[in-house]
Image (tube, rainbow, N blue to C red; front, top):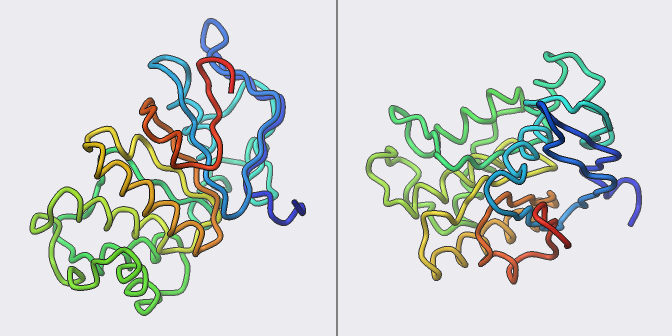
Length: 217
């Protein structure tokens, strides 16, 4: 693939407290690609997510997001890179309860300092099959509906990298497969790279490849 297609690049990464917790020699993720980061509890999955999002700094190594090495930036510069290039689907959805569905998406655009594009936000809801929920408040949504809204919000500012934290952990088999399908379709249509950080082995067959932090890939 071309250099322009590389969204995330990790080289010689190490992170540790009193002993090595995470070591990754070489890893890349590309536009339109889906990658699962799997492994048992304590293997460093959450640390990996926080490093990629610029919420932690490694002991050594490089993390490039959209061509920029975020390990060399100030905290404020990392905030701007994260706001414009990275979308995160948290395990706890964090929808703003006082805002409607559509206003949650527009808030994401505003916080990322991107142009407010209501039409694009509505298109995202349409792709996820929930355009009729635009004016509802979060408390009026089912768990599955709220998750789709959170996914739409995470890409409302057109990020090149989407990181999903345990998106299937509370779902049964059918809904887990549906959630991964939605994430894949949305990142394919927006040409973003998708990183699914999870201990859920059910996602293996739904993603392009897997980085297993607990052993061999």
